[in-house]
Image 1: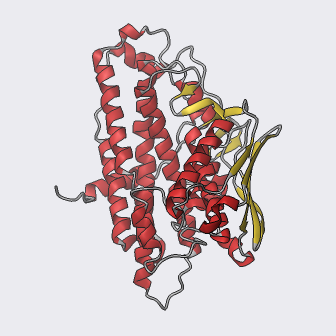
Image 2: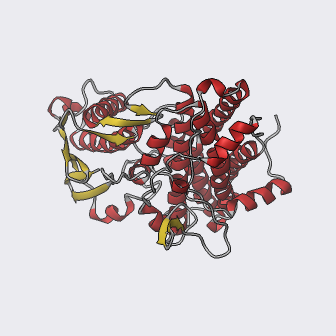
Image 3: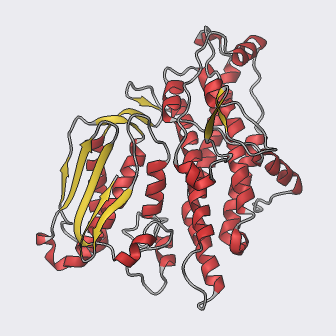
Length: 442
């Protein structure tokens, strides 16, 4: 099969779609939209994604083609660019479903259906894209919240001003063609999501190729422009995969009272953190060939829950615990596994947020390294002769213990990707005492 290539005609379409601002979507909107879904609701979701995903993908293709410092010329970056362009082409060439006139009229009118609530702007977008961006931020105007769009760009209707259900239509009225279309569109999204699975490691490989191209005499520190681009790129990737995963789950999973797609309205913090502890300890014991890794003490109310994506919280805690486990083992040695000091995880609920504190006695982070911990491809782990490249290769097959240099930066983006108006999530290393201990707060 010939490799995918971007034709001049496809480039024209990419530039056209990239000029539109993307629409921000909140957890609350996704929960309200996905509750008690019908074939008509799922159709409206398909229509939204058929419009929204090409815009997000086009923006990434355009950016991947114009990266600073000749990063765009790296082979692995071109592979990722072609993945995004191929997914973009599949979406814009997917034909709309053939629907009867009465359903088309009902779908476009929204008569008698309450609109979704206004989305809360994500504060991290101001840092990633600036105060006036095309990436879903909102500003308050005379007529209420409207997308903040640069002069000359195209306007789009905010999510809260749209209608997303088909009122007063019995399920039996939906024709077989509608069910077939929803199934076909969902399968296409599954294929797209699967195609982009290796994106993180492939982009990291591209940055590594760029560093190797510069030669041994060049500084190994990644420029700020590339660090900022990686933040924007991975933040966008989290949003795209979230939208796809939510739509696929609504179409394929059985309804559950506590779940709306991949969002759990009662995410139990104790259970999620316990699972992350078990997984992190397993990776630690496997990596260091330990019979029993450092103990982890969890202090958390067993009934504490809040609406969130359990997989996101599990990923954050898992990555932080891996760092703590590795630090403890490497400081005290594998021969002392019976006396390794415990790692403490304390979860506290406040009036407006939930705080998770992870503390260890692994020696802390050197003061000189603290500004670097949020940068990509920086690791405190001693690397072999092949450096990060060896860890990138291993990460395709199992979760690496460390040495990838992406754990903290990606966890920070995941923690900031969907802020809730009721419960806030953020990530910070608040206190590190060199040679003694470290405390991380979620």
